Length: 216
Image (cartoon, rainbow, N blue to C red; front, side, top):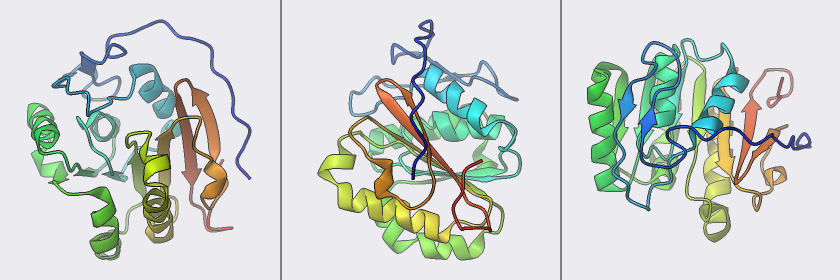
């Protein structure tokens, strides 16, 4: 069963919470600006939520292969690389947004550590996930931050995608899901650590050998 949600105290508004200016929060590229085109189709994660996720992951970025399923501007995956992740795969279907993501990768000179796939995350999960898993041995750090309505309008596809990722991920992988209060994490396998950062709800799952899914 998922752990109880822990309400968070309101935080001071920071740059990035207005959706116009974005920066890397920590690590090697701390303070680096990220481009965001302002298109309402993209919902950049608020800085305070990204920072909270990084605090929960703590020192577990090092050496991981990042998979950013709904890449957007790339803020999550690039933050992970800044904090020691080995490389990253970004998946972003919206072509103008994918171009912005590509520019953000280039700004940080991370082309050699990043792969961008301009395709649907759902299609990638069905067509390419199994092959990708067979070629990777290092633990994953998976970010899933789609439009919130996908958890309702495309719930079956979302559940299938996340279940497939969990099934194929190497041991010691971490899966981070951003939804809102309408999504029930009990629909997913595993013991999720679920925390509220209104309007976002964050679930984190760590995969261990003892029971397949566990959260520390």
